[in-house]
Image (cartoon, rainbow, N blue to C red; front, side):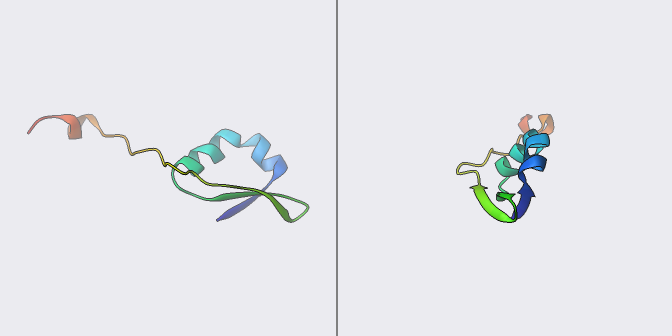
Length: 56
């Protein structure tokens, strides 16, 4: 679980969303107190490479 400030969450929102989609839990805090806890209920499936998609 990672704790970030509101300011950092606002400036790095897209990066934090990607981390949440990867399965990480993020807590956004103000003045040291947690205000929001986010996690991804349905994580994004891993992308398959072209090599994996080829027939043997």
